[in-house]
Length: 269
Image (cartoon, rainbow, N blue to C red; front, side, top):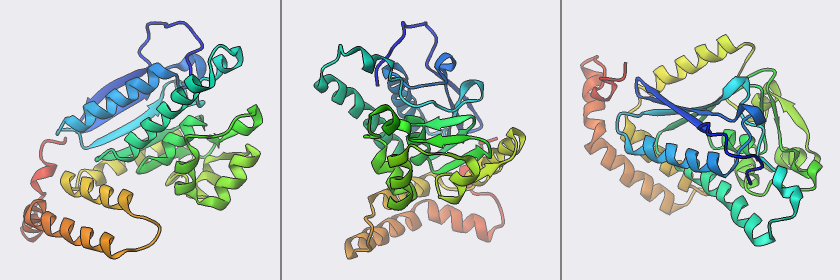
């Protein structure tokens, strides 16, 4: 992940906020929003800002000019000016971003148009809800460049399973949004941008009903789980449930009985 072009002075990530939703737009349209160090740093900052702001309930990541992300900006890799240690450090930096996104304690939605390649593919894999258009293109083309999908591979496998990950990672195959839905990469594939917008609105409205503390605890529980059920996992789940019932659960159950919105839904509009 290296920066092949001079700093244009344009923010690599644009931020806006409305109704409890923190919108993040990848903003390097001249290279189809390919990621460089500056964009990775800006995304890390965005996660920190959104997590610290209690008014934020949902983060939505999208790309400028109708393209989500073309992957990592690899142009400088061909210059030979970087040694192996520097390249490894830069590559691992993107993995740190994916770890940060995976552990983000609020709902993370990706709104994916045009293409999601390489690192963009990885971002989709760590989102809680992924919405795309039928014609969008997804892939891990690294092997066709003589490279490997190093940092995204573990997240892709966790998302889609070993069999489909092997096929795509080892052949560099490109799939459409429709196929991405079938293999479990995305949750919704829509025929038009307008349909995507409606799906996003519906997702946001549903997410507003969820208690923020319960969302954070549930997400942590899921991320901490292994592939098999253990007594330790069930013990931790029981403790988390007890704490939730003594906290937000009191308000949530009372609101249900009284047939009114829970207090955490106030002020989102």
